[in-house]
Length: 376
Image 1 (cartoon, helix red, strand yellow):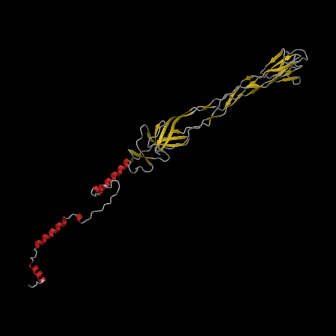
Image 2 (image 1 turned 45 degrees about the vertical axis):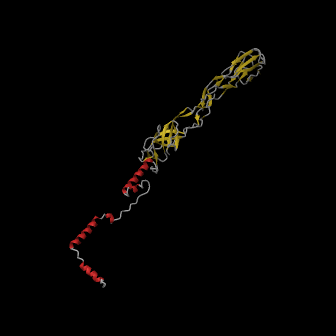
Image 3 (image 1 turned 135 degrees about the horizontal axis):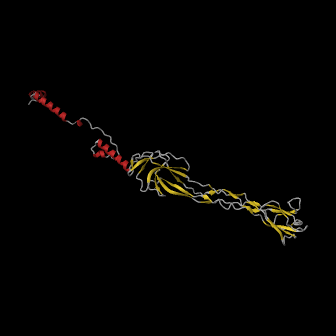
């Protein structure tokens, strides 16, 4: 059997295949258009790439089916939780400190500035006058100035003299005894009338205080009495920042040079969280320091003498003897002839200083203790 020509076969076949009608072509075009309109847009446009931060809450995007909005919300919630509970980072910025609830029995917080005693008061941040307390009471004992005492306008009498006529041994019958507060010449005409008779005299008592005078004293004043070593100034704390921290706390601002503290009356141990530093202060002191009083000892007298003259008028031209001790003085030919004069010399005032005084007494006792416990 002869082999058929392929070309002729195909030609014959194409001739024999009926041509499609116009209605069939229109239906095919309509079907293709419908399929194109029904296809989802994702079949032609690739899904957008979303960058997700890792960290707390970041893994939530896996369970959300990749939705970017859900991942962002979860991360924000986790960050807020960390700020309020204190787990993780500290939300208090530099210059603030987290202050949780003030412990029971304590008050505050307040600002405390400690400075050397006598310094200027610092201005309070809120404009009020700072409360002033005191710290570092003195340990040293105070001193006293030395006492000095002088008695003014005191005077002494002359010593007492006793004379004997007719002997030179200060014995036997006395002619007379004289004691005087005056230093004027004393004329006596009661001496024995016999001439050229022996005689003797002796001081039988020393001078005595004629006028006690008045005491002039100085000293006995407190000296080297140290005061408080520190001033403790207290101000109201500025308003809270409002930023939450810790277990229900807030971030409180710190003021340079001042401490943020709580206080309690008495001397107390600092509670946990408030033990970075401590200030022991007092509201006042009972200061009974002083010195014992200075007082003058009474004056005494010393010296003095009595000159015995052989005539009236106490003339140096006449014979005379100075009797100035308790020894027996021979006064021959003086106590005779009925005329004798005596010239006393008053004793000298002896100052005897102070009767004690100038000794420290009393104490410096702090009262009203207040304890401050601080965050910084």
